[in-house]
Length: 101
Image (cartoon, rainbow, N blue to C red; front, side):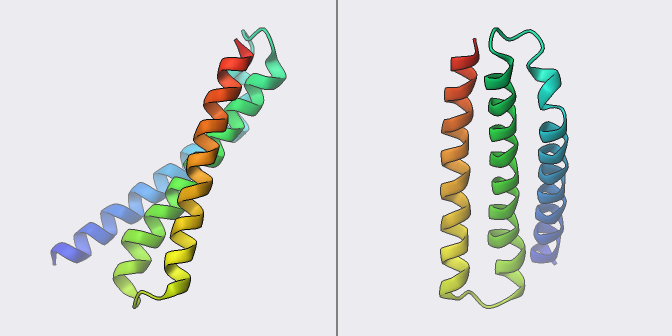
């Protein structure tokens, strides 16, 4: 029963991250209104949105799909790839945000 609850909570968290990802992507222009370099600030917000989407994929692959299906090599490769994309996107978002100031 505990496993089912954790899977459900993880799925809801991943959905919330994807909604936040889509909202951040769409609202990126609003974040850059007061920036000295608005295009760079917009790219920073969109890169952060990509990081949110990748985090949602890591949660789905690790906590939802990993509990339903048997773990295979492809699953591990996809998890590591999504985690790498998330880390690169976070670093890129921070770098772009600092450049937009």
